[in-house]
Length: 154
Image (cartoon, rainbow, N blue to C red; front, side, top):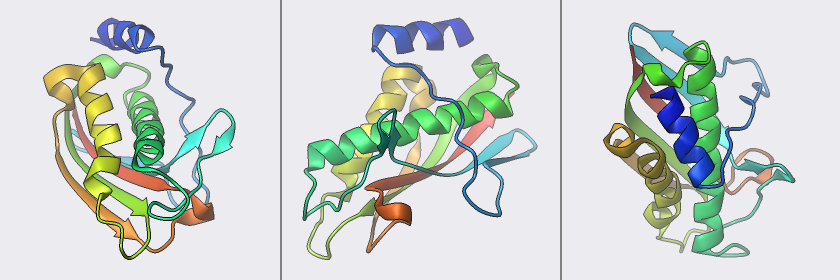
């Protein structure tokens, strides 16, 4: 499956980033049994942090792109948790997405769809998951999106 995932990423014109290091006193993931709990991954690109507030200075489409970057970072963390072998990934179990948004903004699910859709595009049925999408008054360093995840591995 690792080759399939790498092939699919290439077809989509994507590469997994290096797994981001934690920014404080926590670990990027914890493996417990056959589950990997990945800490929140913030929206980031090769050009730096993806910042913004949905409902103010960022569109839903731009927010969905920010969520995609979080999904790629989540997969990068899972790859490290699996000693480089994404073929061990059996299922994306759950995502919890936080959207930096105004009080009036109500399209959080459309923003987090960026991550959900990308995971299914890359992983097929393995990428289908339970999910929450919630608003946050602010997120670390002003980023637009943060997503944490739970993954089943072999």
